[in-house]
Amino acid sequence: MSNIGVLGSGAWGTALAQMLASDGRDVLLWTRDPELAATINTERHNPLYLPDITLSDTIEATDALPRMTALDVLLLVTPAQHMAEVMQRMSVFPRDLVLCSKGIEAGTGRMMHDVARDIAPDSAIAVLSGPTFAHEVAAGLPTAVTLACSGGRTQWQRLAATIARPAFRPYYSEDVIGAEVAGAMKNVLAIACGVVDGLALGQNARAALIARGYAEMQRFGDALGARRETLAGLCGMGDLVLTCTSTASRNFSLGKALGEGRELAELMHDRHTVAEGAHTAPILVDLAHEHDLSMPIAEAVRDLLGGSDAREIVAGLLARPLTSENRA
Ligand SMILES: NC(=O)c1ccc[n+]([C@@H]2O[C@H](COP(=O)([O-])OP(=O)(O)OC[C@H]3O[C@@H](n4cnc5c(N)ncnc54)[C@H](O)[C@@H]3O)[C@@H](O)[C@H]2O)c1
Ligand SMILES: O=P(O)(O)OC[C@H](O)CO
Image (cartoon, rainbow, N blue to C red; front, side):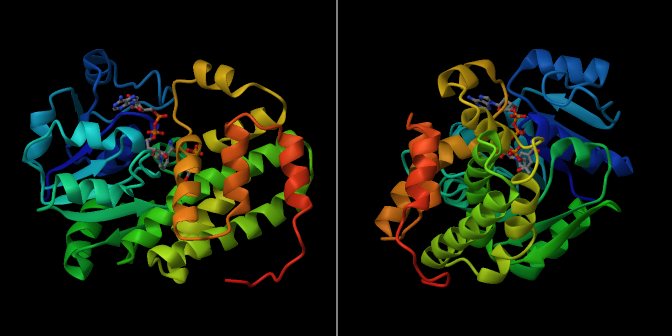
C-alpha cells in the first residue's frame, strides 16, 4: 500500500486527507502552523479551515517538511501562489506528485505543473481537479474528479488505487495542461458570475456569462495545447457548473460582494481563505495578450479587481460589437 501525504492544511488539503483516511489508511498532513498541527492531532479538528468535521484518527498532522519526502505519493494543496516557496524548502520529492491547487503563478505565468517540474524534475506529475467543495468531500458526499496523469496509464494505475474511494471517483486523463487551464480559469469566471449576482442582473446573464466564459476557456486552452474534451469534462464544465452558481464558492462570493459595492481591499483584509481567481485574473490576461487572444470576460474581472466600476464594466461588455458565436 502506498504511503500518502498532503501538503497544505487549508480546507481542501484537510478535506483530501479526511477522504483518503476514510478507509482507515494512515495519512500525513503537513501544515506550516505548529499550533494547528497540535490541535489536529489532539482535538481532531481544523478549527480555522474545516471547523465542522471531526477528523479521522489515522490523520497525523506535522509541521516538519522533511517527513513529507519519505512518502510514495504527495498531494500538493497549498494556494497556487505559495506552492513554489513551499516546494523549494524540500530537497527530496516522492515519486508521484498530485497537484490539487487551481491557479497560475503571478509574475511568472507558470502553471502548477511547470512549477513542480522546475523544482522536482524527477517526480511524475498528476493533476487532480474537478467540482469539489471541500466540506462536501470531507463529509463523504459523492464526488468525481479528473485525474490527469503525465505518466500515462502506468501512473494512473498507481494513483487510482491510492486515491479512489467509494464516494470519491477519479476519472483518467493524460491532459495535464487541460486540467490546469480549466481549474485556473473557472475561478476567474466564478468571480464574474458572482458580480452578476451581486448586481442582480438575472439568471439569463449568468448563463450567458458561463457559456461565453467557456468559449474563452476553449480559446485559451487551444493556445496552450489543452484538449477540448478535457475542458468539457469534470475539471472544466463540471467545475464551472458548481463554482459559477453557488455562494459556497469563495470566488463567486468575492465577485458577489464586489458587485454589491463592497471594496476589494476591505474584502481581502477580512479574509483568511483564498480566492484564487483574484490572483489568476491579471496573469491570465497577460498570457492571453501574449497569445493574441480575445478574452473580454477575463479582462473584465482583471479590471474590476483593479478598481474599475462594476456597472461600467458590464456596460462595456454589452456594448461590444456583435460577432459570431463560434469564432476562433
Ligand atoms: N476549498 C475547496 O473547496 C477547494 C477545492 C478544490 C481546490 N481548491 C484549491 O486548493 C488550493 C488551496 O485552497 P484551500 O481551500 O485549501 O485554502 P484555504 O483558503 O482553506 O486556506 C488557505 C491556506 O493557505 C495557506 N497559506 C497562507 N499563506 C501561506 C504561505 N505563505 N505559504 C503556504 N501556505 C500558506 C494557509 O495556511 C491555509 O492552509 C487552492 O488553489 C484552491 O483553489 C480548493
Ligand atoms: O471556493 P472556490 O471558489 O475556491 O471553489 C472551490 C473548488 O475549486 C470548487 O471545485
